[in-house]
Image (cartoon, rainbow, N blue to C red; front, side, top):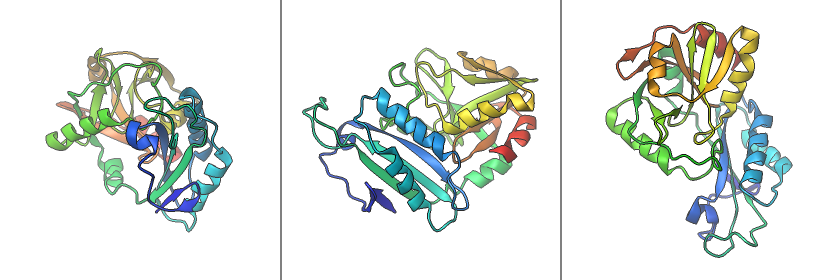
Length: 265
C-alpha cells in the first residue's frame, strides 16, 4: 500500500524530480506488532537530510501521522518514507521547487531476515566500490545505483551480503546494512566521512555499547582489519542485528556481543 501526501495512491507524476534525478531521500523503518521502533530518530534523520540537500521544509508532523496511519492495524512489516523534491525547476536546477512530496509505503518484512538472525550471514568482498563524496556521506539519498550494482554481484556470487569498500579501499558498510566488529571489549565501526549511510540502528547500537561495558571507535581501515576480529555483525532497522558467520573464507563463530544486543534492538 502506498500513500502520497497522505492520500492512498501508487502513481507519481513523470515530472517528479526523483524520477529524473533521484532527487530525494528516504528511511526504511521496521513495523513490529503495529509499532514503529525508533520512529523519532527516523524522522530526525529525514529532517537532517532535507537540510543538507537544501530542500524546502516538509511537514515532519504530517509525515509522522502518515507513517503511523500506515502502521494501523498491527502486524509486522516495513514502513518506508521517501521525500521527493517534487516537480519543477529546469534541468538540474531546482529553483522554484518548494513543495516536497511525502511518499509512504507499507510492505511485508523480508522473508529471509528471521533465518539470518538465527544462522548468521556470509559476506563476500564486493568488487563495486563506493565513490567518496563528503557532501552526501551518511545520507540515505535516492541515488542507489551503487547499491544496485553491489546487489547484482551478490546475486551472481551467492553470498548473503557484501563487504563494501570505497574507492580508496577503506571499509564502509554492506549493501543494505552497517558493519561492526569486536576485539575483546573494543568495538569498531567504519567512520562514514566520505561514503555510506548512517543507519538508525547503527546509532542505536552505538548508544547501547557503553552500558554493556564496551568501548567504541569509528575507524577508517582496510578489510584486513577484520581478519583479527573476534566477532562481526551487521545492523539495519529491519534486521535489526545479525551475526556474520564468514567473510569469504574467514569464519567467525563468536556471538557474545550479538547475544547481548539482540534483546535490546
